[in-house]
Image (cartoon, rainbow, N blue to C red; front, side):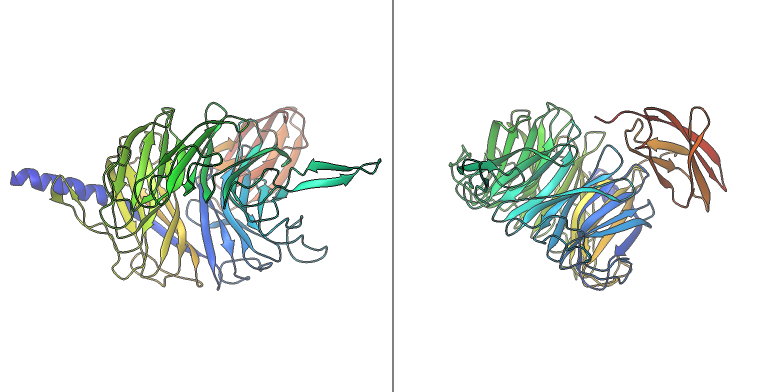
Length: 556
């Protein structure tokens, strides 16, 4: 029996110690900088998105335009800068989301109250604010250059949380709104009043306090349609994805009773409220999940089996049929697995400290799930099968710590890792990078400590790279193109370090169309002005000379 206990303790110890910190870095100016999203990129690196109050100080290369500005950092796999971009007007611009697009570029989504930037003034806002705050979405190409931007909103408060490219090449925006109907009024030739909906404004009545509000754009950013969903009180959209059938799954927080578009009563103070809609926004089904307390959803995702997984946190103490386990210490992570109709398959809670906030969840290729968040106290010792496990590395002096958790497809814990400093560390995104590592990205206000070597300003972007010792290192090819085929940009990705080199683009007749010097392992190539066909990109460095064929297709 003693031997068995020892083996189990060693096994759980390996689970908690299987991830090494490869590096950690802080990015920011001398004031406050807040990170809200991160995405892995095809070049083995990543891109960070958030907002900044800092001027050109620290490692920030541009001055601030107003209050908070959108701030984007494109980094390589070692955490070194490829490029950075500051975007904003004279007011408040809060960047909440960044997503990769099919052309190798990025779509940025957030909230703004900035007016249009006057000609000759410093700033990037091209349209006036319509109400208190608006949706503000910006499309960047692979080089980080702006292609277009849109301001969308009503007379009230509109908060954009996410934007992503849809299967038809357009974009879906998801957020919350309390704006009322805002038609555009014109006077006809006969002197009568003609009321036309302004599609860049809210065209449906507000249901209550805040409502879910989604807006569908085409590939140029023009509004195609929009929908409002809500009950009589507060309904806040937190997460949204396109589903395999072309529709969408929406998830968020609701404290509305059965009213408006909501067909189920609340279970407690507030619930997870999940809606499945078709490709034009018609509700197919909806569900409310919760216990007797407050249940805050932050992530909804369609799983590869066609069902769904939702993640957030709960302080409910009742054990209902869809609330697996009970909250053992204040507020815990709560993960809910559902089938394709929203019926619960399994439900799990995970406890680390007194208040545990889940902010990020992704499905891995092996159908496991990677969960990120933070604990507002040191992490506690846990038990499993009656055995006390080794303590996850927490910091008693810290307020919040980053927490990474990996679970199986049935919700069983596989490993966990806590990284923290002596101050407040709020993890916003946990992702797996192309090299098989894990990236923990968030905001920290701490000075240097055990896990953190430096600080720049009041709040910094803080990024920690983990290596999973159980995963084999991916063998990189010398050169590849992504995306390929492409209708606009492709990114040439070089799989080795070099000091200097040149990139050349040829057609199949051998005519040289472009040539320029390179100093980065990611080389954006613009094929926008060329006819459909096959092109050859030649990369010559002080280490290798390689070529790759790229197919240029027509744009839809």
